[in-house]
Image (cartoon, rainbow, N blue to C red; front, side):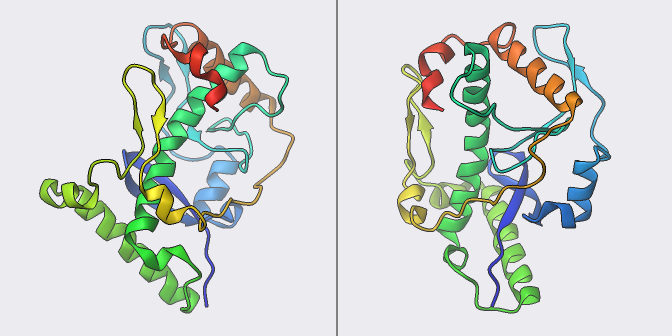
Length: 216
């Protein structure tokens, strides 16, 4: 019997390139992330600015704040800049959330505990991921795989997010990832998060963000 929680890394919307056990410190990828030794691209200038920022991954409250991994500001006494950052980060995480939700909703094997050995469960999960990516790459199949309303959609005027129907299928089956890592982030990680927070409230702002900031 296998009860495996997964972490996921996406290169393009709703397509997976890395699947790893959520106990990330135990994987080579996780170890390199924790020590900031992943072969990521060099820092580049953010759009419409002269700010040189490192490439980062997007995480939620379960993950530690690292120089290459952003998580929300904690607490409820936040500045507007911090609240805007949390809102913008949550918009990015929604892409990941939808990707994983689609995978689980379409491959019902993943809805519950997989009654296989760990090794067989690993291959079953990888098969689901490969089929998901392949179907996503085929236009005709993608239309059937993701019919209208299946994924979250954002109203282009109000920017209110309309939940996709996959959420009804997986509602009672989503598991939260347990906390990973330390509560004492390195100073460099705080500097990187603050840099992105200032960018989202200045050069990188969008017109509606202050109105929707409480959606986070």
